[in-house]
Length: 223
Image (cartoon, rainbow, N blue to C red; front, side, top):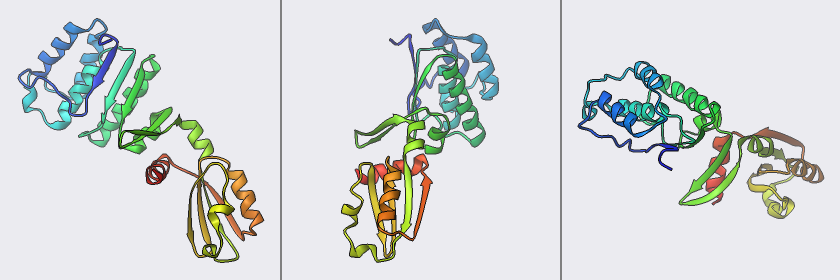
């Protein structure tokens, strides 16, 4: 299994007494899928000093070296835990492109990140974890198609009515009220929510797509 998997841990553990070049040679001796040409290219692109001891590298450089050691291989599965930590914006962009390239070559890429914008850019399947519990597990395209925010204005004060019953529709995850204004967060059935708003004589209804960040926040808050 270790021959088929490449892993970059969150704390980027490396042999601090080795130099960058020694670490690369060490990894190359362990894995038959090591690609010297890719390793040499990444060494140049990441601007890593070959002779410098790992203990003297900055946090960002240690992250770059850890990524090099993973990307220089061609595993079946690549696991990355907070891979962009300590990287500058240019390097983060290079990282995302490298992840997409690995996937295009047939490698399954599993990565954990709190940088939701990065996840939304390249992931095709999303899981949301909170305190060890799996709260959401869906393809990203499905989330984009189904999740909606519906803002509506009623001709009466919403707090005077039982809105939780009024909108007891499958897929309605959360309702916020402020006077005559309601905001409905729905994971599906947004058309049914709009129809219900019409039945309630809403004077204004606006349906908006929801970004992954809002889905994450609403899902975690609901939990």
